[in-house]
Image (cartoon, rainbow, N blue to C red; front, side, top):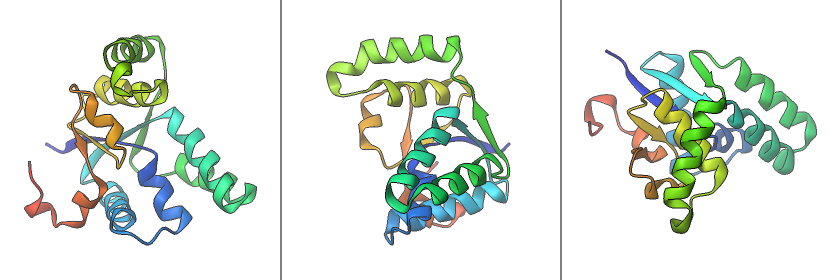
Length: 151
């Protein structure tokens, strides 16, 4: 059985903006693994907005539009709708964890991951660690060969 994983927007943004770091290299490795169907991968429809927005701010409008198009066509990636069930879960998470810094968008990302029973959330956003219902996998984790990754 293939592990399911929820992919946060920073995994798509870092390689596009050209950041040269271990986390960007981990993100690139993760994206290759998704293309090779090593994971059942999900992300929220919000990710499209975040990718377009950040890439536009950093590289310009044309690059932002191109990044959005590329994300929509990314192989083996499924989008989770921000429907009423996801928003209801996000509201519960926000009520539980807002005092620990969880914001509405991150609550939607976590709720989206939970809706697909993702084993982990691939993200460098340490703010997600306050949510006990999801397990965050830092992007650097994906630099290691699959046989050496912790379960």
